Structures are given as C-alpha cells and as structure tokens.
Length: 271
Image 1 (cartoon, rainbow, N blue to C red):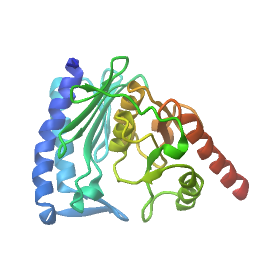
Image 2: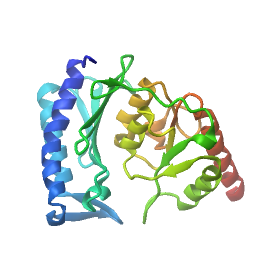
Image 3: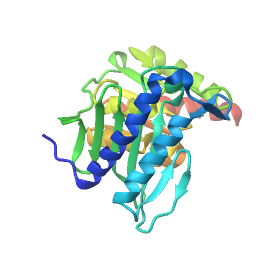
Image 4: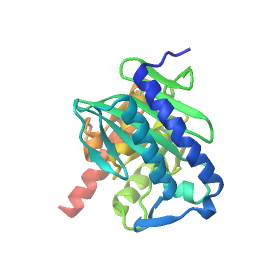
C-alpha cells in the first residue's frame, strides 16, 4: 500500500470534504443557480462553495502557504510555496449532468510542482503523486502506457468554445494528428485527461489555452508515472505558456514533432 505524506493527506482530506457538496449539487444540477463569467464559460454556486471549502481546510493545516485559485485568484503566502486549485474542473460537464469532472490541487514550491491530487468523486478515483515518490490511483501504482506506435495510440485533447481559444490552430492540429492515430477523445476536463495518461488509459494528451490550475497536479502525476510532459515548444513552461504535450516515453517525441510542424506552418502562413 502506498504511503502518503502529511501534505498529501491534507490535500486529500480537503478534496473529499469539498466533494461532498459537489456530489449533492450534481444530483440536483437542474436547480443550481448559475451566473455567467463570460461567453459559454459558466461558474456555479457549487464551484464557488467548493473553492471556499478547499481554501478553509488547506489554510487550517498550512497557514503559511499561498494560493492560486480559479475563482479567487492569487493569495500570497509567507513561505514561497502555494496551492494551485481548480475546485471543479469540467464545470460545463457538471452543469449539463455529464458525470466527468474533478477537483484538482497542486503544490508549487520555487516554481516546481512537488505534489498533486486529482479527485473524481463520482468514480471514487483519487489520483495523486509526490515528486520523486511516484504516482498512484487510490493505492495502486500508476504507469503510463507502453504503446510505441502512433497508429495504435488513443490521444486526448481539448476543443475551444465560443469566445475562447484559437479555433484555426486546433483544427490544424487535428488535421495533422487524427489520420495518424487510432483515435482522439475530447472529454472536457484537462486534469482528468492528464490523470488518464498517467494511468495508461490515454497514450497522450495535448492542449493549449489552459490555466495553471487546469494542469498543475496532472503534469506531476504524469511525470511520476513515467511519462514526458513539455509545452508546445519542447520546454518546461507548461504552467506559464498554457500549452501542454503529455505522453508516454515512446510517443511524446512524435506527438511533439507533429504539433511543432503544425505551428511552424501556421507561423509561415501568417508571417
């Protein structure tokens, strides 16, 4: 059985407490009060309440930590270490009654993510990792898939919606990648896409226009499961750039090359 540190236990406890309200509200999703945060970008009362619970619970145990949260933004701490929180990744799924959403909590110290938790309350799947310790789902060790051929690979991505993202770029990426692989999936929760790469369910994942809270925990979980993660330029600035390419050790390089080729072509066209 995997042994979780005190820090990860604090994160897990907070996530499970926040999940209780989310599960309840998901069962009554048609009655939720929903406000618009932007074009086709909804935030629910449940989302805000979950973030409040996470902030309160984590602050009790780690009062010196800072926070970066989707709804509240940044709160500076005293130790140069902070929690990066998405209280409800997959809000659109949640509001439409689609049972695919999660709570994501990462811990960043001196620019490096050192711990991550992604909790899917409906499936009761807890993905977690600590830097140098490994990645786990509940108590089982995670390993990325062993597939080495693109034509056997199932990949995941995100698609932009009204008012967000570069639609032309994503269409170009799909045009390049879809004919080369066994399938591409779009499930609508980046944290779970990354967790599924770590679990070997997907062979790879790429997306742009993400926020740090969408992927902080997931990036570490993939890395600790033996996968490779870069930004679209091949560097490690995923949280700053909002771009991510994650895959097993055999497929990351060809997937990254395809994405780079697409963006070189787009740059040549516009330049």
